[in-house]
Amino acid sequence: MRTVALILAAGRGERLGAGQPKGLIALAGRSLFEWSAAALGQAAGVDAVLPVLPAGCLAAAQALDRVWTGPARLLEAVEGGARRQDSVEHGLAAARGRLPELSWVLVHDAARCLVAPRDAEAALAAARATGAALPVVPPADTVKLLDGDRVRRTLERDQLGLALTPQAFRAEILAEALDKARRDGFTGTDCASLVERLGVEVRVFPGRPGNWKVTHAADLERAAAALAGGGRGA
Ligand code: CTP
Ligand code: MG
Image 1 (tube, rainbow, N blue to C red):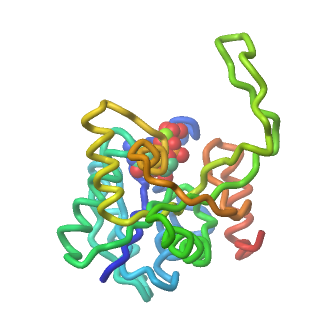
Image 2 (spheres, helix red, strand yellow):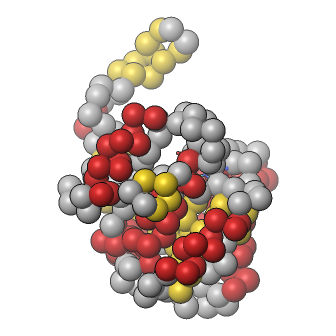
């Protein structure tokens, strides 16, 4: 049991505004965290999957437990925290406690419910070089660095990448990155941003555009259609 996939579903989903945590919303018969957990549970090299759920919502894991087909082991879910990185900390601590041999951690946004097993396999393969890997896709739009209502500058589009998940890390690197962020009072919106601050090279590799994140209300219909059609292609 060397590799765990943390399925982060403890966010409030404020941009979605559905009145319930985003990861617990059901599309095409399953909740977003169930779709994500099932896909990563089928990835080669993933030994265990650990859902990180909103406080007070651990019972939501029971339905998944009853239908789990693996082959990875489904670990008992834990509650997340206020910030995404707090949820990662809770998940990592639980995984380390339960899997003494733990050496690799995949961190995945449950809201990327179109994730495929090969996305996890690609992240683990890319992380071998430096101990940290990040899938990126090119932005479709031109990106501006802003200062209020003024443009500071226009960023070179071919130098930009949008960060996806699953991201893969050596367990000790991720633990150190979380510790340093805590000491420094740093908050990041993904795990790679915490690891970058250690001076560890995060190896970038091409992500799959089809592995996009449900964020706004309009995304729900598109994701439901893709899931119902088995759509994990592009
Ligand atoms: N997440 C988490 N714990 C948090 C915050 C986020 O586990 N404290 C998870 C979310 O559940 C989601 C993933 O991290 O699957 C990516 O975060 P995001 O898309 O920002 O989701 P939310 O934080 O739920 O949404 P919003 O920012 O719109 O409130
Ligand atoms: Mg958020």
